[in-house]
Structure formats: structure tokens, C-alpha cells
Amino acid sequence: MLHIISLNLYEYDCQSKMQMMWHKVYPTCAAAADLCTVTGRAVIDFQGRFTAVTDRCVYSMLSDSSTGFEVFATFRERRRRDVSFLDSVTLKLQDPDVQFHLQHGGRVQMNDTQLNLSSSGQTLHGVWISKDSTGVMANFTISNHTIYLFFDGSTAQIHTGTPVWSSVDGLCVNSSSISAQRLDQYSSSSCQIQYNDSLDTSVNCSAIKDHCNTLKESPFSSCNGDVDPTPYINACSDTLCKYPSVDGLRCHFLWAYARACSLNSRASVGDWRSAAGCSSAEGFCQDKVCSDHEFCGEKISGGTGCLCRAAFAYDYKQSNTLSDPTVCSQNSGSITLIGCLLEEKGVDFSTLHLNDRSCRGAMDEEKHMVTFSFDSSSTCGTEITNNGSQITYRNTIKYQNSSDVISRQDQFYIDFSCQHTQPETKIVAFNIKDSSVVVIVKSGQWNYTVAMKAYSDGGLTHALDSTTAVVLNQKIWVELTTAGLDAAVIAVETDSCWATSRDSPSSQPRYDLIKNGCAAPGDQTVQVEGNGEGTSNRFSFNMFQFTGSSGDVYLHCKLQLCVKRGNSCVPDCSGGSKRRRRSAGYGDPAVISLAWTQ
Image 1 (cartoon, rainbow, N blue to C red):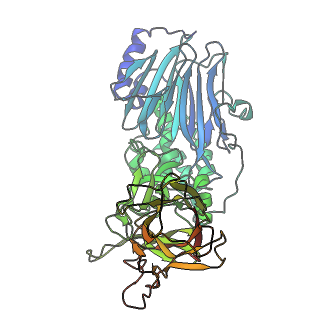
Image 2: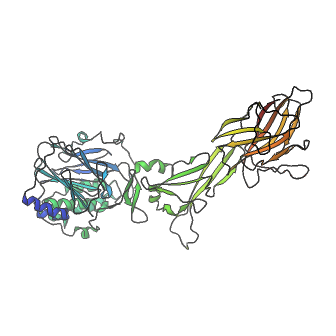
Image 3: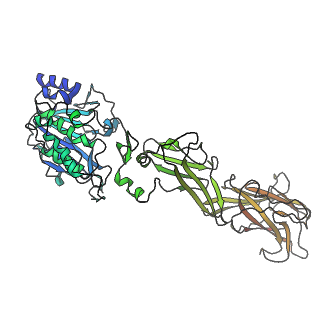
């Protein structure tokens, strides 16, 4: 059970002041009996012992076996895979079963509910919690002990108004017990993997140590008698000798010590920020929300932004790419750029576009990914080429603003393309006693259907079937239709049609109806309509039979799928020679056969 007790009058007055500006006025109240500081990858326990967390796991900072409460911390990497940082803090209560997640940017979740906090604070399940420009503060009373928690996104401080009692455990009690305090149930399976990134040659460790040792100099020296600066100096040099002094880290450890002094000493460290060349006390990246694979840091162009965590970005950087692989489908293509990689390079995604300048990327506000896409209804300047065996759709993501006199952004070009193997039309056979046949064709990236129907009228309203009597010299219409092809890109062209008295297309005798996409000159009854204009066409002829045969007629056609470029797929049937216009098709035509039995 969680035992909540009321504070006495003196404690209530202190708490009222702390609700206004807890970290600054606490020295006017009773000093913290025990203080634990977690900053960067360092844990400085209640006894002032320093331990570095070298992985990216979750650890118990403070827990009470008698009441079931626990404070645990999650460590994650930032710019380097081999240096971890405190990433979030969670306060877990057993009765009631509730968790408060203190995250980057001053965000706080109670279980799955995002809290809207202010400096005035509120009490939820016995926990008083507030937020100001420096960070998030919480306190609660359990087993006659009040525990105070502060988190600014990089540093957490846990302190008590009374000495630590016997039923508590965690790294704040004994930081050397690090392996025993790892919480595997909250940690990722890969959190213990160790990395060795290349040395950062920009780091001057000697200068770093001199900087960290300013904690022994004025104005910090006034606090040295109350708060030992040694573990803070060790934490500072341990991190900054391996990691660049960016993202506010130069002042990060000084701030943690100054705040410890404000909680444990009546002596003031004065205006240490001016002396150390540090900016205001506002928390770094407060109210900046990043995705799970990101952290908030300083951009090369200035200001702060969501940058990629090193483990997430590693494969992209090794392959020198800013995107996931292109996603291709039958009628569309898309590519997704990694938003945090663009941030690192100082690229504003809103200035990027495809070949068609009106086609911009769509930002996923939760994952911070930018997707560029095209399809048959919005080609976005996509270039289509064909080499006889493959069709290629190619586009480019680029930055170009010719209206600007100058530019401070590098020229940006990312080519991406989709390649599809040519679709092959399959051989289809059917008996005329069926009014139509539909065949599903699977070829490469294309899944489509081919249908053939025979009609007795030009309006294509009366389909022939086994009950329809067809007499010699009666006009017959044959329609070829497809479904599933992109009509904006692909056309169906009937290259040739001929009849035989047997089922083999190469058998003799042979009678031509269509040659080179045009009506065969030897038969004036043949008419071809819509050939090469779209994904369907039709032709007509007068019924006949082979002399001396049984009356069976086998009609064969060669169909060609063609990439449309203007009217390039339409045969040129003008003039006496009826030469077809040369078009760019997909390889050799395929034979379609229709068996007609009178």
C-alpha cells in the first residue's frame, strides 16, 4: 500500500515556496538529507560515489520493497553509439498502479495520458507535479518520507527530506551495484551491446579536465565544503573526454553541481553562469518533441532540432544515404527521406520538390519522415524510358530556387527510380460457344486481365454464344479489353490477326485479317478501331469458312503492350502501303488464339 501522510506546517510552507520555484528557494527550507544526481551517463549516489552507465538499458534508481514504489531511469545514445545519456525517468507506484513518465521536452505521461502541466502544479494519485522553464518537478510522501524528483531532460536529481531508510534500494543507494539494478523487463533486448565508435579528434581531453575542474574554483568553491565536487568533476571529464562539448554539455555538469549546492548547502554559488560563460537556466530543448529514434540537439545551421540517434543512423551513414529504399508498385513509386538526417545536414525539407516543383514531400509529424511520391494521376514530372526488356520510371528530389539571388543551402539531388520487367501476354484459347473469356495475367510487376468477346452488332450489345446462329458473310465484331493496366502509360496494340483451319497458329492454310496493326489489304471487309489508343480495341470482319474444311475456324492475334508517348502506339494505316508507325513496345508480341466452331 502507498501510505500518504500530511506534511507539518513547516514542511507545508516550504512546499508552497517550492511550488513557485522549487529549485531556487529550497535552501530557505531544511537541507536535503540525501541527494542522488543522474546526469549524462553518470550516477552519483547518496554517498557521493560516482558510477558510469556504459550501456543503453533501464536501471532502478530508487525503490522501496515495503511499498512497491520505484524510480527508474532509461539511458539512450545520442551522437555516438558508445556514450549513453539519461533519456527519461519514470516514477512507478504500486497502489494505485500508475506510472509517471518524465520525458524530453518537459513532457509527462501518466500511464498513456499526456499531462498538461504548469508551474502552479497539480496533485495526481498523491503525487504533486509541476513544470516550469527549467524542467519537471514532482514530490510525494511514502512511509513518512517525502521524496523530491527533478528532471530537465538531461539531469535528474532525487532527494529526500530525511536520511535513507532501510527498505530502499537502487543505484541511488549504491551506484556500484549496477548489474543488479538493471531492469530487463523494461530494457530493449539489444541494450547491452557494446560499440566502439572511432575517436573524436576534435576533443581536447586536457582542456576538458581544466574546464571540469572549475568546480573547485570560485564561485563554486564556496559550496565545496558542503557538496564534494569530485564526483561531478569525474562525471564531467568521463563524458566530455569521449563526446563533443555540444548540445549544452559544456555547462551541463556545472549546472548539476550548482543545483546540488542549492539543495544541500546554505552557501550560494552566486552568478556562476556568467563566470563560466553559460546561458540562462532554462532547460535545454524544453518543449521540443522528437521521435523515439531522435534526440534534441544543436543543428549545424544554428538552433536546436531533432537529430538522429547514432545507432539508428549508423547504417544510413555507412551507405551514404538519406532515405529508405524506393517503394515501387504497378502504378506508383515513392521514397521516404529520414527527417533527422536532413536536420543534421541543415536541409529544410519544405524547400525540396520533385521534377514538377509543385510536388513536395509529406512530413509524418510523429515519425519525422518525409515521403515523396508519384502515380498515374500525378506523375510529378516522372521520366519513363524503355530498353526493350524493362520500363523505368525516374524522378529526382531536388532543391532549386532560381528566384533567389543567393543561396546558403547546398544543391540537393536524389535520383530515385522504379524498374519493371516487361509484361508478357500469355497464350489464351477459348471456344466461341462461350460468349467471352477472361484470363488473369501475371507478369513482372503487373497483374491484369485480358478479355475477348465476339458480337453480332457494331454497338457491341449482342454477344455471340452457342445458341447464336452465324451465317457466312455475316459481319462479326471482336473486342479485346484489359483491366489492371495503367491507361495513362500503357496502350494495347493488336499487331496482327489471322485465321487457320487447325488450332496451331503456324498451321496452313492461313488467312490474314490484320497485318502490321492495319486491316489486311486482301480483305475489304476488315475494319480496325481504336488500335494502340488505349487498353482496349476492336476489329470486325465478315464470317467465312475455309474451302473444303469442316467449318472450324481458329482466329489468332498478336498483341503488343506499348509505352505511350503521344500517338506513338497508334499504327499508321494511311496510304496504300499501310505502314505502321514504329512504337516502343515490350519485347516480342504474344499470340492469342480463339477457337471458333460453326
